[in-house]
Image (cartoon, rainbow, N blue to C red; front, side, top):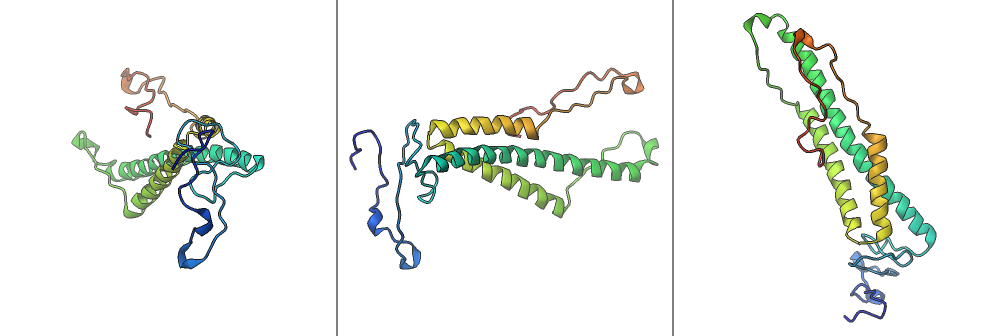
Length: 192
């Protein structure tokens, strides 16, 4: 299919004969599908023919929605970390109650395994994080400069509001040991 002057390529199907399931006809106006860097606002199309930008208000709503979606990814990521910390604290309280009298045996290792319900909740939170991040990745693949800038803005705002750094430091040190200052304990800060 030849690309018209201006470099825009329309979807390759004939929109007048486009058939939906159950043989219902649909009025369908399709915008530009551009796989090169672009700055289109009007007549841009994202993810489906239903997400077709026809005016400036729709594009502004798209930009705001993209920012909120990326902030939601950061929120889900933080929620997953907080839930894991909650489950770990819950286990530490329970194990300290059970094994407090057995301290004369020296150091003991207690293995923890999440319950079925806890693992389901962890899996759902991970799926929400992964799914929303995947949609953001698909939006970035349209190479629209405005949408990519909105992704960066959403990532920054999401980190600012959802992942405020809090580190607990033991100043006095227990048992006279110098344990050093602990910072971020993850080997890789990304992909949390």
